Image 1 (cartoon, rainbow, N blue to C red):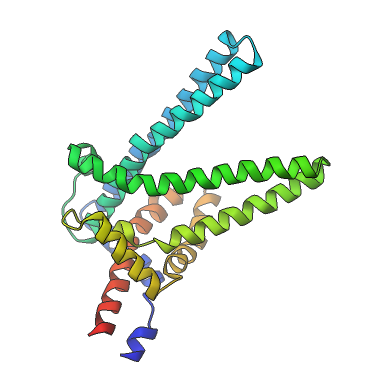
Image 2 (image 1 turned 30 degrees about the vertical axis):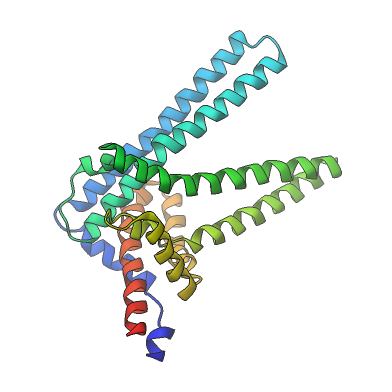
Length: 262
């Protein structure tokens, strides 16, 4: 039992095994298509920005009016993220989970959380947690830069200190996010209430506090390689593997905890 408690899930093994899973039955292409559909959402953000930029250029006669329109823009971006982008991203993860479970998903599963009020409400409950964490780190970064510029008016010093402070905040945010790393793997089972899913994820985090970070750092070299290939390798191999490997890794962690308690 003690050796089981000391063992940790194999993040690298899960990543490699995901490649074998994706090699069967066109699963890789299905997941790539789903990722591309999600990336199309980026164009919606670009068009929204262009629309507001043109509106400000033609109709904002004063600085106050420009500030009001920018505030409206940020609210619109937040609403688009919360009510469309994040539920769509959860659908992408659900699709990867079905592939890892050797089910036969279709591209329409990407829009699963838009298929009924019950499913959409569940997606929003999941999305709110990630949305508020992102919003808090953005507001903290803005406040930090404002305070830094106020106390250190020298441009070079203020820029350096602001960059360091924001980097520390992002790292702290990543650590906190990784603490709830497994919640999505559990929450995709509709029969599991979200409160119970969060409880299970918290229990997994207590047993393996750096499980999420271990998974992230196992994938980090390939993420960097994917960026060096201008995103081609990232889209073709890294992101599909990470999606499938995530569920495999969380299952390993859960199985090890169950065996250690027997």
